[in-house]
Length: 155
Length: 93
Image (cartoon, rainbow over all chains, first blue to last red; front, side):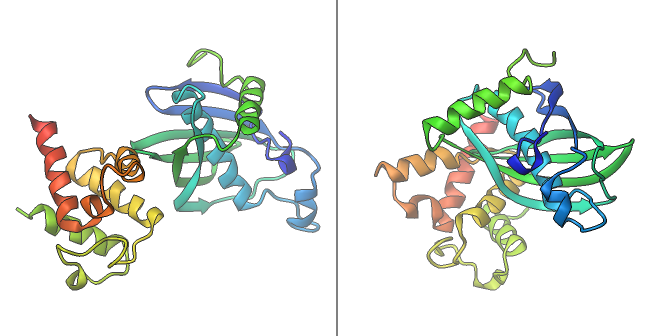
């Protein structure tokens, strides 16, 4: 994970493309400029970053479901709760499940688990469109390979 | 049993700040009611669930952009209800 570069997922542990579920794991860095400001003297993962990690998890699942051909991005947060602080160095597991497949959008339930406790949960809306340019499309392939999104489903 | 329009109007009222009494069958969701595209997605999400259908927003948008349909065809509520009835009928056929 490189928090400040929005490389938020270390690896995909489980993925059921048709069933619409994914589990990813990340290890927070011990140090990051993000932690220096949030909060000075009490470094914890900002809630917006928790949302972003959950967004990435479901985004990669949808990206794979669309066979790498569509750009998936956050469209809305229907509900979100931040239940405990997540500290530098923590192992973060995200479970996400698509609960509704719309036309051009999807709704998902997601949660972040740290030390067997739910740190955050949210219902989020993902939008789907064409890639805006080639460089982003190529970068998505590169990042997907790094975190093993492109390996066979469920492996 | 509620009519399609009654369900649609209630969903719009529930997902927006528009009073139910101001939602008429001839109202245009965008031009008259001021619903933007993201808010309309919330409405579509609710209608998908209420009617057990998948409103084909992507293909509707494509038809409009290509000039094969007008905004009124899908966003005037009476027309939207007619499209929903068609989708429900196709599902049960």
